Structure formats: structure tokens, C-alpha cells
Length: 148
Image (cartoon, rainbow, N blue to C red; front, side, top):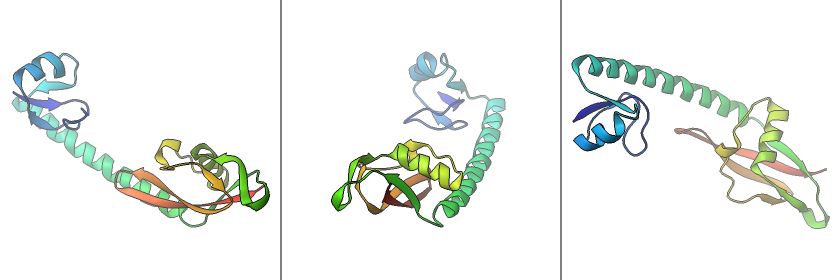
């Protein structure tokens, strides 16, 4: 059965995609939950418009992410933390701490889940933290941990 997705469905497709799925899957799962509608001539035209709008929105989001990336890579972000002798921190610097420092210094609000911090920073000095601003835009944010 041919259906047009009304919402993004994980492991199946994105909003506006025209797909061929099993009859039972469409009849018992996708259509009753409002995730898809049966493809007719008018619905296919509507799906084309959905895909076009999605593409425009994705392009605009990618441009905004690239602009944000240039703003964030201009200078390192300094994170203050309490440290003992030898540059070892009392505790650690987490992604939430980095996001708060970015907001204070650059007035940019990031989602802490976009930071790919493998493990918290536990020493003074520079570090690189990968940030995924968009599925196609990833930057390495320069972070410098300094003693309070």
C-alpha cells in the first residue's frame, strides 16, 4: 500500500515521503495513529509540497548552524573551576558547565545534549569539545578550563 507520511517515523522515513509499506502496517499502525495517510492523487501533490517546505526549512537551519559555528569558533570559551595543586580539579567540568559558560561569554544558548563530551573534563588547560549544531554541521569548540 502506498502512503504519505504526515510525521517523521524512525527507521521508516520523514514527513512528506511517499512510501510503499505492508497493508497491515499501514492499516493497523500508521493510519490510525495519524502518522500516515493513504496516497491518492491529491495527497501525493500535498506530499510534494511538504517535501519542498522541509527542504527549505532544512537549508535555512543549516545556514543558521553554519553562522553559529563561525561565531563559536572565533575564540575559546573559558570555564572556571576550583582546582588543587597540579591542575587537578575538585570535581569536574560537565557539558552543563560548558553550556553555561558559552551562554555567559557569547550570548548563545546551546542544548547540552548537542555537546559530545565523552567524559567530563578533570584537569586545567585547553580541551576540544565536539558540538553537533545540525546533522551536517559539527564543530570542535575550544574550551579552556581555568582555576577560580
